[in-house]
Length: 185
Image (cartoon, rainbow, N blue to C red; front, side, top):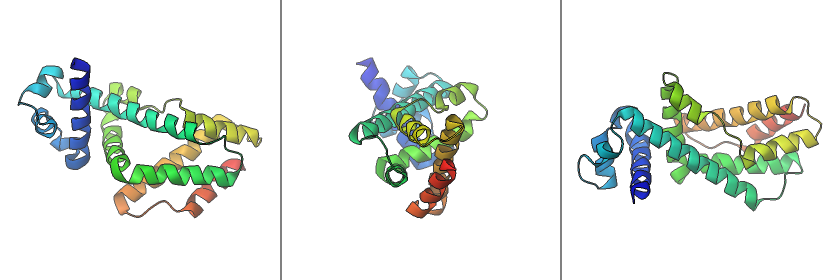
């Protein structure tokens, strides 16, 4: 039962962070969001640092699961057009619904991790099926420095998502076509 309660609290913390920002993330706010008695969050996560660690760990788990599921649903990427279509889908998922909420929380945690090495270590990009699909595509097209190009391409996509979180709108396919073309050069 403790694991389920911990997940419930981490999910509630993620929601609080998405809605109220880092300043609004308190044990009491998480208790309210989870609809649990005051003090419950504090009983499971004694400090704010422990709560943030749980939130970030849950966030990374949700992101990794999403990327694994997406990779399993699609065949290997063969063309630049297929890669662009996949990146458009990823950007759309990160800008709408629960994906948007996770993106808001992810960026707040990324800023917080500048001063917290433990959070930074958890947030470091992980190996996942989505990253591997991009890596294999670039390698299959003879790109030198596959690791560097994969990192740069995905970082640029993250930057576009961040820009649209702040300024509104969606990531346009033409923008991603340009990034993929640059990665292939």
